[in-house]
Length: 192
Length: 392
Image (cartoon, rainbow over all chains, first blue to last red; front, side, top):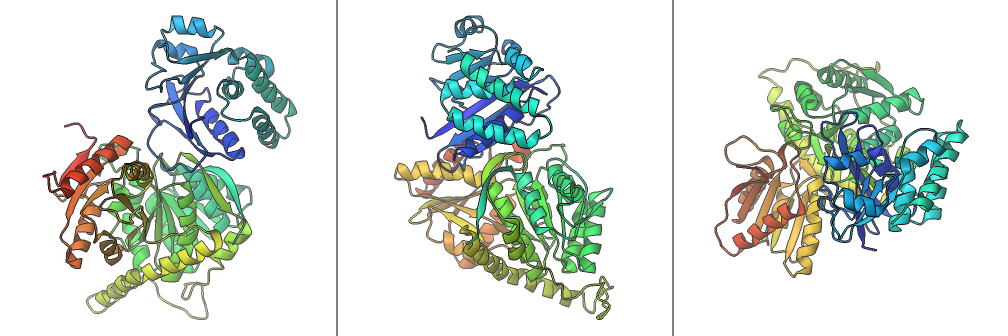
């Protein structure tokens, strides 16, 4: 793997793109990596397209400009792809991970994705509804991301998540269980 | 050496954590983007009983600094946080805090000043009050924001000068990074107990603070203040030395990055210095003798020390994230040129005003600056003042 991986999250305001970037960074930190996570601040409104970013590296990161050429792009809401070019600036051989019920081949065809982009898909919305009880695709997408890119060790990641969720939702063990199940299912179900 | 925890924190969280560990007597503050979280998170520490601080939620930044002045004059360890228009509204009281020699510490998240209205990063707010008599410390990243806050309280209380610690708005304030935090106990030991020498609530030794001071003594008092700012350089270095001994993280008045044998160098403050380091590394690999100087302390300005560091260079580029509106160049460039002039050094100094209102500063932008610097070093004509990344 490259020394530093740059990731861009696409979502709509309120879907948790920022939280997902922070969660991923926190998980990467726990596995000994250097990290940055930051949202793009614009006129964000509920439902409007938003982006957030991660940098994950084996060494210290001093770069403080925006992510322009991401290695990985994650789309939380496929309806964005009609109006936003989610592959913009993607480095050659980059991975595009989409929360959608369709296959990578279908996504490639429907959205006319360039041939050099590797596409992975997972129905994280369905998974979150079935495991957590409502549509919050950002946590399962973390599981899919780890499978699709190998950026973190899955076991380490799930253990770290468990610790953090148990701390945050002390009185709601069902939330912890639901989230962990969602991550595991997305890890297993992601298609490439 | 102390033990430290590795954590992921945004700049605002880092500053709020530092305030929690310092556990000041009083925090008076008013919220403003992008600094709101600093005092919002701190207020939650107060509500949760994690600190003993009296939190004063005031109705404006002018009142915030006024309340801080009252608290510090009474003998309390006092802190606050703000940004941009908030700092501007405080301006009147900032001068009073400094003139009264009150050791207040202020977390400022750098943001552009209106008008036009803008919430993003540049350094015009901090530069606006550079003459207010506060020590000004810039932070490159979240780690430095945290470390600088811890050192600031010691600097302020030792030098009897208020200190403002800044981060770059959104870039650092809302960017999460890996950093090391000291334990609460170690911070408590490092900052020590505040024992003010003179204070209003000391009934044994009644004093007057803020008396009228006309043609008879005003000048003498100002002269003493000027001397105190001069002497604060040594205080800043002493505190940094103690901090380094405990944490292994060294700080000076400015950082010299790959300056050994450098022929050309960029001078940049705050988060941009980190981005410039990436460019310097790449240029060094190509054999270009490039370096970076990152002023950490802008007030007091390390004039002699910077002039010495620059003396051997062929050409220097000063990057200013604000403009002086003096019809020639940015505030950092003005200071650098004055420092070189007094040193008797004539040198090519290029000025790049950049990033106003949060305009992105990319690696290519800094590569471009180094390219022009290399040309200037060879004697090719290069514009003395440029506006980097602007459309015109």
